[in-house]
Amino acid sequence: MPTSHYDQARTHEVAPSGQPRLPHRRRCVPGQAGTVVFVLLSLIFGLVTTRATTSEAPEATRWVPALVRAMATTSSQVVDTPLIEATFSLDELPSGEKGVLYYRLTLPPGAHLPYLAGPYCGCHDETVTKGVGAEVVQAGTYTVRLDVPVRVHRAGTTELGEVIPSEMVATLMAGDAVLYPDYAASGDLRNTGDGPVTVIGVAIIATAGSGTPLPPIPPGVDAMLLTESIVSDWIGIPPGPLHVAVHQVTLPPETQIGPYQPTGLQALYVASGAIRRSFVSPGDTAPSTPIVQQAGSTTDFVSPSNGVREILASSDEQAAQVTVLIIEPVVSSTSTLAS
Image 1 (cartoon, rainbow, N blue to C red):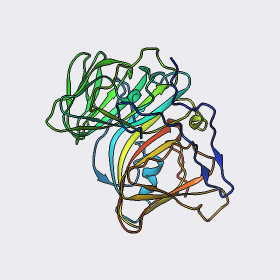
Image 2 (cartoon, rainbow, N blue to C red):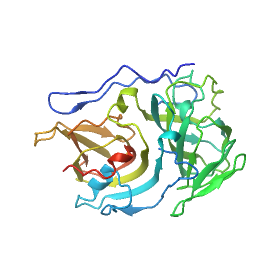
Image 3 (tube, helix red, strand yellow):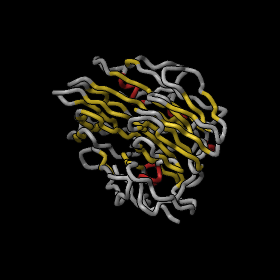
Image 4 (spheres, rainbow, N blue to C red):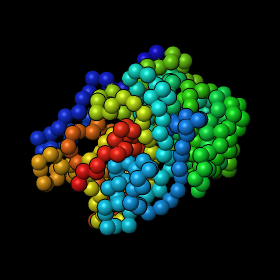
């Protein structure tokens, strides 16, 4: 059965002003999941870090996303909290055309899902889809049991993480992250606490469905699509291993990051406040007219454009908190930050 939420014909354009023209996204009619609004590292080579820190100068031996490197150049106290950081190989990724789902899952007490939440964010005719993924718990007690092994990284630790064998239960609390080697695996994902469970997740999945239809989503479960990629977003991404990260970033009022040049896919969910995004084309000194994103909105993925630099700024009146999903090719990790 085809997945219908990927627009395979869209391409990105650049407006005369130099500002990338954002693609129109197809949004599906939400089912019981509510309003439709990343990632695996293999069990052998896995690495996820979870820590809260102010931005520091990049370490030579550690991957630092282009946005995070740009934070180090600002004079303001930007607070950067890495939630998930992972690197995975080409063999671990789905073959052929693929897409990214960036989502938020809310489970009321006692609620559970038989499959991972990503496909529930799409159309009502979604199928179980192969790929890889990761989730980080924001609140509540979240238990995971799948018919494949998973890796759990506990909040506040720097160890590689613990492997949870198939059919064993992993209990996760706020700040814990879990990596999924097989996004089509079945099992039980459950809220075993007294309050709601909130999870931020990312999945890199094949655009072709597996043919196995998803069962109906249980009442009260909200799988909210923050944003998704389309096939043309991957035009500027070379084949090969990928770095994936989710960071929570707080920008004080009147803070500007950049201009910097993104080297991969990036999407920002604005949790509070407002942000302004503008772009500087090659040869230009003045940025484009800012695009304003209010709280509750998510930026679309835009594939990297050669030489186009981005500026991210908070409003003048209040701080902005954003949860950023970043996907960069490994070959870009040693590239020089454009300024």
